[in-house]
Image 1: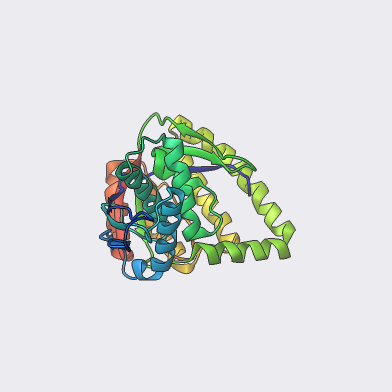
Image 2: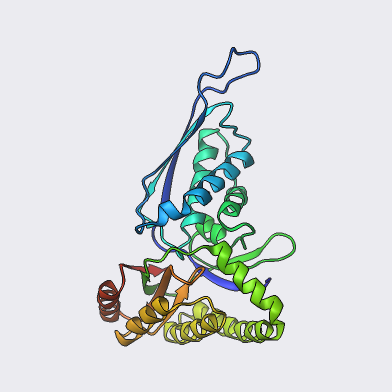
Length: 300
């Protein structure tokens, strides 16, 4: 909706290896090596790969098409791995699309800029989200902490330099949600109740301005407070759920400075800000008991 957002990459990634066979030409007698094989060795929450299988395959085909690679003319083997756990809300689809773009460019002998990799990753994201915002593939390409705003042309983004790292814990509800469905539901409600949506958007813009200043100053206590406020707005937007709300409450009771849901919502992830090593450990321990999976990391 062309409003700014803040996004941070976590210290984990998806790896990808692409192997291409000999390319069949018109003059050759038949096709001797062609087709697409994807070996997905990424760590993932139970059910994620099965539920996202068709979207992942469509994303793969879109990236191949972007690079003008046709599996009907040559064999393509893709092997995915890495230490980023595939779970709704972490940007696993963007990490998949961007890592594939990098690996494919390498296999083709292309030396692409980060902007060109990002553009290819965006094409892949369409397989997962239909019309993606571009925020996730940009974070997956450039890493770090970014401000991002979609426009009628290319998105505007800026890499933020943080004065100090920010300790976080993120945890999964174990629920794999569909971004396309959730976005469609919100869009339908927006069209039915425009004033409701406009009021939330106004509140969000004011909150964003405060959060950007606090983040740039490394005022993590304030960022935590604003994360709480943002989660409340997302509840009103109807994209949270009881499982996310429960994990947010668990994190705050364990000593988090603030917590909110991440990504699509209605499942997936939440994250919590911790001000010191002690609270980092206590929040992680509490979420590890309350959630199917929890991870400790930082924004830096």
